[in-house]
Image (cartoon, rainbow, N blue to C red):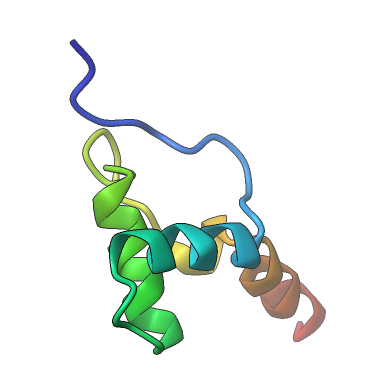
Amino acid sequence: MATGCELVGLIPLQALLAAGRFYAPEQTDETALIRAAVNGLSLSDVKPFNPQEQILEYRLKALTAR
């Protein structure tokens, strides 16, 4: 039985926000929606999920800021 999952690679922000809206429809804050998606999808059970490193748009923003 699987108890969690690990995201390999990057995920688009909109995909994670859509998952967050599914798990926490009352939330509107981006950070809260990401947290709800990470919890709902068990993305931190195997290895900690780092939004700054694993969300495509956040990663691109960090790379272009250099």
